[in-house]
Image (cartoon, rainbow, N blue to C red; front, side, top):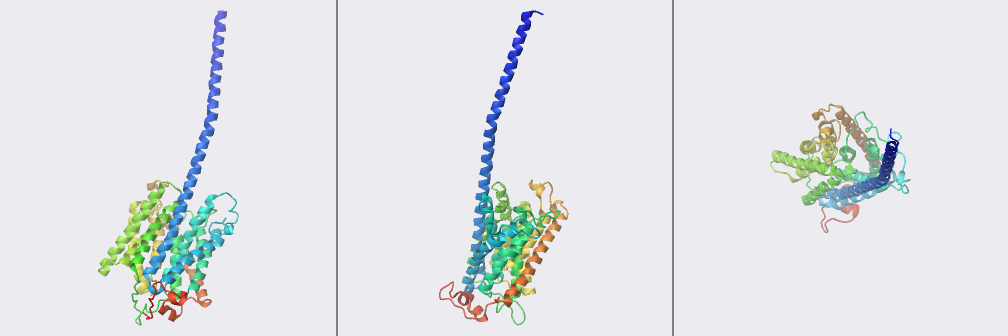
Amino acid sequence: MNHDLVVNRLRKGFVLVLLFMMLASLAVAEEAVVDPVTAAIEAAKEEMQSNINIVWTCIAAFLVFFMQAGFAMVEAGFTRAKNAVNILMKNLMDFSIGTLAFFVIGFSLMFGANKGLFGWDGFGLSGVEGDGSDWNWTFMIFQTVFAGTAATIVSGAMAGRTKFKAYICYSVFICALIYPIFGSWAWGGLLNGGGWLENLSTPFCDFAGSTVVHSIGGWLALAGAIVLGPRLGKYGPDGKAKAIPGHNITLAALGVFILWFGWFGFNPGSTTVGDGEIGRVAVITNLAAAAGAIVAMIISWTVGKKPDASISLNGALAGLVAITAPCYTVTPVGAIIIGAIAGVLVYFSVIFIDNVLKIDDPVGAVSVHGVCGAFGTLSCGLFNAEKVLGIGDANGGLFYGGGFAQLGSQLAGVGAAFAWAFGLGMLMFTVIKVTVGLRADKDEEIKGLDIGEHGMEAYAGFQIFSST
């Protein structure tokens, strides 16, 4: 082979090798530059999403807090004018006292590291102050307003005849012990560990608290109303129930609209994530509320020959309570059906409790929160459509081919909630009755708890001395 040709080929080969090495080094350099930039962008996105989650969850918590105003208006409007101040004070104090009780004890029992039947660390948020976690503070305020909701449900069923100091006593126990311990069984895994209902082979489903919040409050209200007894004049000598109309349906309606508004924090807020799921859960929530109001109106119009405003308002609340558990896992059609059934249930439940069980519940709290909360929780086992919605690999609801597994877990949760809240409620109210006293004096009840308990009136110069 020609010597010059060989040398020339070697030169070309050497040049190609050098060129390849230069290109490779440039690629490595480019990758070294791109990776930190990409990493920085991803970190910024993650931080932004985290902050959006915090902002959204805080806004939702503030909306749920505003529901305290809604409960106050509903309860005051559905009861008599002579007890309006008492109702307002109870709603103020159950949240104020409940906030401290939940902060000091309840939150740790509910979300501390689970060492059995409940959590047992982090009392008073100890250890959180210096950990640099903004989320724990956000989660704390969100869960505090939920605890306040569970406590305030009880006041409506016991309105018009309960001693104020007794109310203060049981508010402490509800927010410090009864509500958070059951909450740890169903929701403890939201922060640490997990409760036994979460750890069932098919986990218990209660997305925003039809049972954890509403039924717990409703069953405690049932126990309180039983131990307390009916208002004076509620039942005649023949045992028949007499209507005791509320003094201001306008206030009651305002309260329901406030609660409906606040529920857009209650349900969509339980995602605790600022993304498109908020809108979907809000739509599902709204559909059920509307269906509940319409169906309750139709039932009252059909049976009573007039479209009753109080029943229609409670129908909206019934739909909201029922959809709280399945709001993330059911379709719009499922939501309408659930709300409609709740509208029927609340009507007949009020009549049954009032006329058959002869338990005096002035605002229908047991029916709205206890009964419809239980139904809403069970409806997860019937209407859950996770695969249809694209949020799971299989549908859990019986009507969507999911079988009975989810329904079985729902029955376990509903049964446990009733046994826990009603059982402890009966014990708690009985102890209060024989110690500090549960029921107001007869004269105070006749004149009104506003004067007897608080020395003032909601409406200046308006005193009622009749026994009716």
